[in-house]
Amino acid sequence: MDSDLSAQQIAWLRRQAQVITVTVWVDDRWSSGILIHRQGQTYTVITNQHVVDSGQRLQVVMFDGKRYQARHQRHSGFKSDDLALLKFQSSEVSYSVAKMGSALTLMTGAPVFASGFPAKYEVSSKPKFRFTTGQVSLVSSKVLKGGYQLGYTNPVEKGMSGGPVLNRWGQVVAINGVHAYPLWGNPYIFMDGSKPDPALFKVMKQSSWAIPVDRFLRLAPAALKVRG
Image (cartoon, rainbow, N blue to C red; front, top):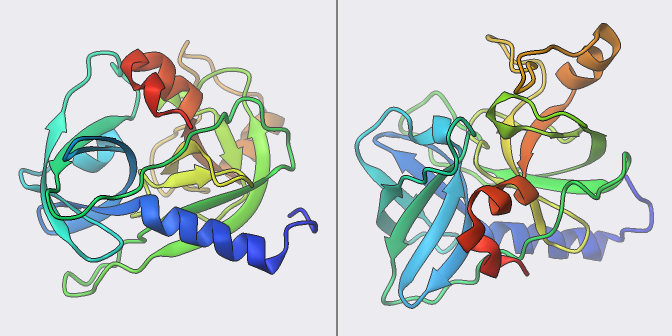
């Protein structure tokens, strides 16, 4: 972690993350999402496709506790990428939305900050916001299946999928999606079907993984206007 980031700066980054990180409820379970755009009273949230894959009722809960019914807006550009857009309307409150930066220009060792709502097994428990600090471990030259390309040391738990990865300026640079040492499956397969060599695989499995905002903006060109 960069020592030139003061406690006050990190506290500011935490507040920035908390305002734009939403709880995404799918039936009776939750995960995370990022508030990325507002047009009038209509808001757009980005999350992971694996978050919304199984479930009928979608809701988003804001940092102020207000809950809104949401709908999944399918986007043909995402194809096999692990991305999903949700829409909801708020006529009573005006919310701030994320500013976006670039993940692909980050250097190894650059500080990054991840947030979301870790899932608990008890249905009766309430989501609690988590903000973690870490650094970039790898920006892969090849894209992994699902669109993942940014590796980082921040601890990410189940339930934080869909939440933001921020740079030191408070810009969202990527979308959380894969935690380190996954319990099942092998997410470390590139889009072309090839696999990393053993040394690279070791770094990959020790890292959390996110989809760069750069990729999202390329796949959904109309979203370019949300870049801050």
